[in-house]
Image (cartoon, rainbow over all chains, first blue to last red; front, side, top):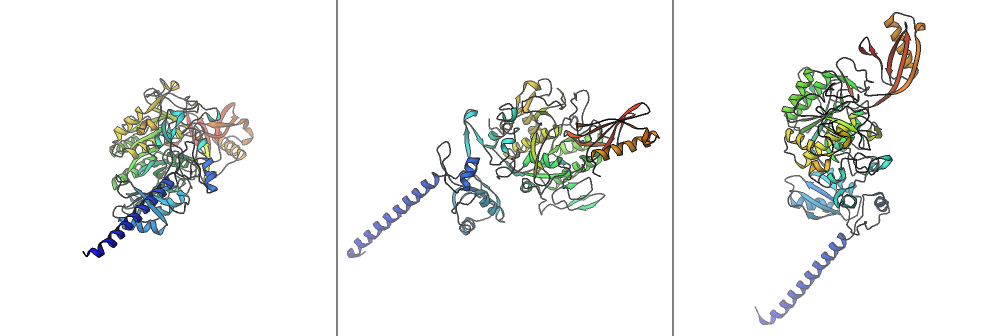
Length: 471
Length: 91
């Protein structure tokens, strides 16, 4: 190099280094500022602020901003991801290396995080998208992590978080918020709600309803032929439309998996899940044993076809024993499907007067009793030191009802989906558990309750946090 | 068919008259009361029937004929005869 050219080159290099350093510092300042502010979509206080489009400080004095977690499908390149986010005026702010395709995305327009997530969910390149929920410390709970949903009726859901509201007993709940700090569910887990059908258009359920994937063939019944089972099966009317005409099935479905954190209605035990509606009871809320058998047969068939049906919720029954029903439940066991059933509402001891299907001695059956908001066995609930296994909240339970409505109802019907929901929550975190392992884990995950001593075999109320390993 | 309370009572009276082979005039209304039943079959499931285990409000209708008392259970969706000669019937 010519000595005369050397000095200008050095000077130019120094200028470029200084510019790069300054730009880097600017980015760091920008990042620090971004991570020091938060628009909180969780509490009513924060929603109010959200509406004002303000930036607010939370109680702990920390700040952040609305973000969404987006998982792109396998094979979607980094360049495509950048192109998509740029097109939506967003920015990838982090990559979650342990989960391929999972990106933390910041909306540069500071739009509502749920709306941004919904925008991504519509893209074919996206497997799922959800807003980044706030996880905070539960100071009253000994510093344990918990997740608080923004669903406006959540404060009425004493089964999930009992603060002593309406004369309840504080802590007489299933510790859902602590469980949610570990998992809020998964759309990979399918729970069949074997009931009066489900209002699959309900605004708080519609995103969590199972739809038959394109690669799974239509259901073929040996007598009825092909049935277009888009969202499940109707064994009452032998067709592919399991729409609920009663409300009972919709109520159970909401307890298991009303969409959580969507700022609508209630939160289910699972915020994300696939609910497969199976209808065998009519508008009156009753149906035949034969129809129940056909619906269970359908669930087993779909499992064989590749649908990940892991749990059947059975919030129904009678005192009449059916060998055929028992046989098909055993087949479900062999297929790896847990069968969670209502112990019944006759205030009787089922060790002496069995109630079926809850009383079948099959390895996948869990019989569920009901508790009230003060941790007392519900006056109507059946019990049995040998034949009833576990208890769950089942009195004045708020859940989804027909026509975008919500209602409170009571019964072991309402306690059963709490346990089925916790089973699905466990599977979202531990998808490879066998049905025996799952059942055993659930029955060990209880809080002992004095009123249940000698009434149910575990002597306890289901605890979701324990079940998912959060406690 | 959807029932109101009066229609449920009328249906019950007609059914009992037919079963006993008496005129409706010979049937006396003993009591009609709102009641919570243990399940969606109103605690009166028929053979081979399964029902939702949800507490269900309805009407308990007690009728009297031939110096005997008979219990019907009803709500908006159904009318049932409870424990008639040891069996339940859905009308």
